[in-house]
Amino acid sequence: MTDQVVLLQMNDSHGYLEPHPELFWAGDRAEYRLAGGYSRIAALLDAVRDARPGKVLAFDCGDTIHGTYPAVQSEGEAFVPVLNALGFDAMTAHWEFAYGPEQFQRIARGLEYPVLAVNCYDDSSGELVFSPYTICETDGLQVGVIGVAATIIDKVMPKSFSEGLFFTLGNAELPGHIAQLRDEEGVDLIVVVSHLGFPQEVKLAREVDGIDVLLSGHTHNRLFEPAIINGTILIQSGCHGSFIGRLDLTVESRRVTKFDHDLIIVSEAIRPHPEVEDMIGRIMDPHREYLSRVVGETRTGLNRNTILEATMDNLLLQALLEVTDADVAFSNGWRYGAPVPPGPVTVNDLWNIIPENPPVSTVAITGREMRAMMEENLERTFAWDPYDQMGGYVKRCMGINLYCKLENAPGLRIQEFFVEGKRLDPDAVYRAVFVTGQGVPEGYGKGREDLDTSAIEALERYLAREPVTADLRGNVVAI
Image 1 (cartoon, rainbow, N blue to C red):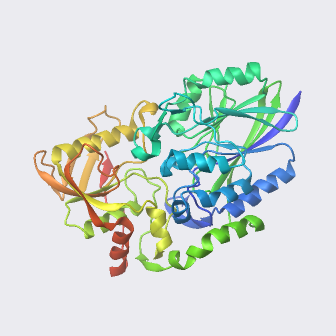
Image 2 (cartoon, helix red, strand yellow):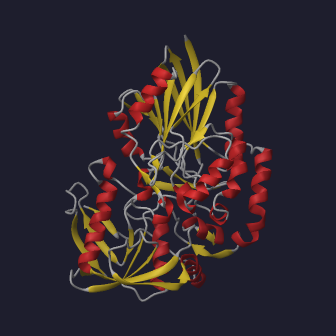
Image 3 (cartoon, rainbow, N blue to C red):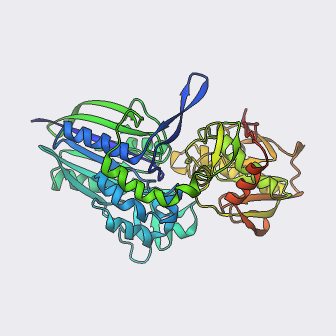
């Protein structure tokens, strides 16, 4: 018997309720165009459902309720009615744990679809915290859907994210659940909704048989063509809700015999869903006056679309150095943060850059520690084994020039290291300014001091002086 199903994917929307600037590559340059917005996503999902009634399933791969001012200020609560209106069939998670496991479980109970995680366990009981899978029915097919949450939550994220929990990769658990769904439940199709990251999910698909479709998240890949790995169709669909992935499948005798894929840009041409637009207006209207205030001007387009160094983080680091007398500055290699085109910078842009708004901190760190810290970060970013890759992009830094060979063995990637133009002295003590514990991780440096200045205050002060530039300057260079 032959049947069809349409799978729709959103991943890494990071709280962007409304349309926002997005970066699109155009040959040798970056272009900024408005994209995204949950009301347009809702209209797009409904249009597909209306065209293929009873044949459409929609999934969210996580990083949904964190990353913008309304998300953080409401600890994700404001998003529940909007997400229910979008009508996903299941989701998994990563930054959803930023408000603590109890708050995320409270939000999950308010959703009208399940949060799935085959790899999230209660520390004390060893029991799964969320359902490992669900079965979705279409007109003619039963689809087994298994969720895999981000494995890094209890490894490199703040401890509050995973209090009372531990996370595995999910690769050991998947085969048993696939067998149960296939053999005992008799499903026609196995779909994995994952937030491990594209490199990890490629390896996962290679070593776990029986996955028909793997919906990927975390690494913000825009896959214009699916990857086919060990018979698994693997897609990922950008970030910030700027894209929706569509996969049309023909299924015959419990096997995919044909597929068609489209990476859909959520463009201004899509007419917003009126009810969802009203919901978003009620969330945003109380904050608009505050968020729309212009705080300065950038002459450089700000984005985080480059892995070794990024203009958005250069702006942040320049501001951190400005409010201290530090020698060097560090921040996280975050991927999220909607771009800011050259021109006015608003308070909303600042919250998009660093929605946690942590305090500015300083620490005394030796040259030897600084080198070890950067070697550790390069290993977490470029580990030969994808399962050892943990985190985002390369740690952002300023005041240093680091030259590295990414193909080298762990601990041996850095070739040359300079601080303020002088070769790194392993025994010298430098003053570093940073934001969040991942900027300078625990175990590196002494005498940490949290200043009476937040990251957003530092950015406002820096931008208030004059128009700024934040061009790439070769802080970290692959040679």
